[in-house]
Amino acid sequence: MKYFTGLSLTLVVAAYPVRAQISLVPDDRSFWIAAVASIGGATLVDMSARRFSIEHRSHGLDRAAEIGDGLGSGKYLIGAMATSWAIARLTGHREVARHVLHVAAAYTVGNIVVSALKPAVGRERPLGTDDAWRFRPLSTSDDWHAFPSGHAIHAFTLAAAVASESHSNVVAAAGYSAAALVGWSRVYSLKHWPSDVSAAAVLGIVSAKTTLSWLHR
Image (cartoon, rainbow, N blue to C red):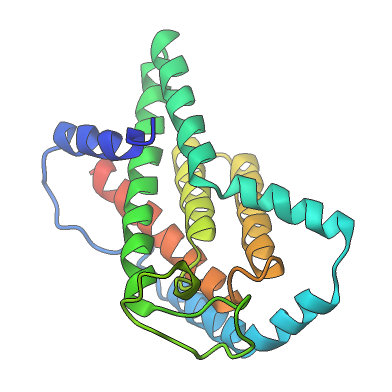
């Protein structure tokens, strides 16, 4: 099952001839202005958010963070996609199965992006330091794999992909709300800085929309 998304990407790519050059999506200026502003603003509050998370702990928030962690966990997400695809195929809903493969392909691309960036950037996680500007590029230690957030990029990639495939505002709102909970949980748990999560959100959305744009063409 853990190879489902990689296999799905291979199957989808094989099924679609290359007819257009891949370009980043969204391509409108307003999205990128908002993206830069979001990452820049998050960077400014990196250290204050860490202090706030340490000073404001409760059982309720701990429980919410556990839920957010689960929603962004790859093993659960891959299992959900595999199950959805299998059910759709077994019940004869081929169009739904195709949408699930598209979502899985987008997820795989996002996962490739985050897997490459984490060791390349080598940013220390906030659990081990109060300095948001400590880097050790190419480190193999997970303690130095803060940027970007893997959980957040998983969640935002899926939210964007499912929203695009479903064309439903309700589904989009639910997906992005769940992704926001995942992002908050990573900051609260001192696994990531706010800028790690903000950058992951942008990367996830771009990965999903770019992949789907290519597949749909």
